[in-house]
Image (tube, rainbow over all chains, first blue to last red; front, side, top):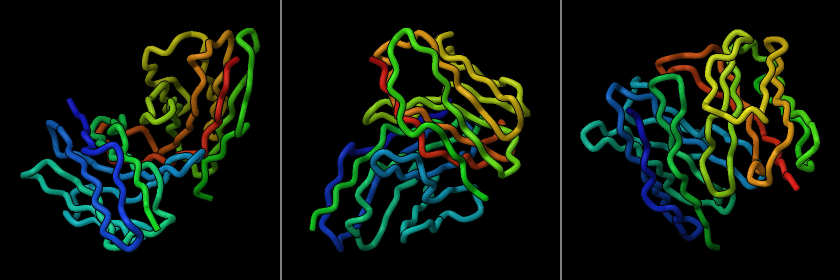
Length: 111
Length: 116
């Protein structure tokens, strides 16, 4: 069975600070992993995806994530937070054709 | 065109009403999905259509009735809903339905449903 755990339901950073959102997965086979962002009252937008081509994945808006098999992790980072990054972030795993989402992390960016 | 559109954006309905949600994509995708998302929660899969045929029904109550009239359109018919059905309903599509997870899902903006 596949599952995703996002550590920290709420993360607060100052503008310009490093953003780190944690995601750990459980999968019996090599997984496909995704990070989605959801702005208030909007749908989900794909930030980046891991499909085994490279362990460091670069996404949109300056975000990147590193796949670490030994730690079963796929943490999302951004070197410098911007006010517009404030949103809900979902990590997801899929190796059966069904997206399984984590519980989400709310990112707050303080001026 | 890499967009999934959903109408209406907002919907308020009574428990005795019948209404429909509409989803459309013109990317040539042959798999389409309905998700339900409650506030502060992740999306939950409801239905999957593959080549216009219902492929997955995640034990959704019969008051929700999906329909896929053609490869570009997906409807969700609503009847006799309960207040607890109030949520954001998201539509998504992918190139085809994969059992390996290698087909990216594109999401629409959602319909915010309120049941009074």
